[in-house]
Image (cartoon, rainbow, N blue to C red):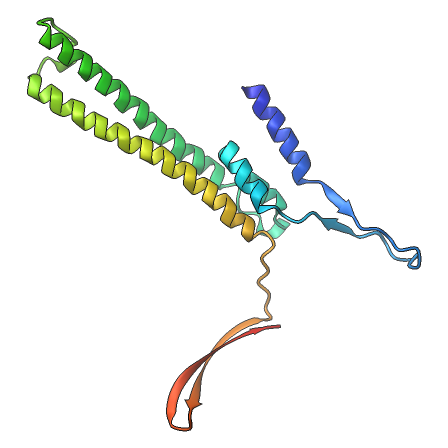
Length: 191
């Protein structure tokens, strides 16, 4: 498993850093060859994030210009969310199995685990149902964290080449409409 993850990271790192060289025309002998970066693939970011949580964020991080790299810090948060939700899922599942076993032993007239001895049969059933609800909510939590990180990778991939330059302006000005009505004009200027 660890070898497969290491191989996946190696393949991803080579594919993320690949560049294409532009072809130099024979007429312009004095010009230097300019490297052009491959266009950033949103689909690749989504697939990587779906296959391995956090991989889409790393892919986006590597594709961003040096001053704007901000996607890799999300990876520990993703694994903390998935780990926490999985911990509660496993814990609640084991507790509800223990409660179910305790209840069936009591119905057979046997004594079960001592940690449940202070509860009567009705209390055991209520705890059992409560832990089943918590387990189900934990499953929803794992799914939400997973879907959120896939969505985040897709949204971040859209903004890899997003340019906010000083030439973009938004102005709000008063406007006279029909020479009688006063209004507000919203103007967006691009370059």
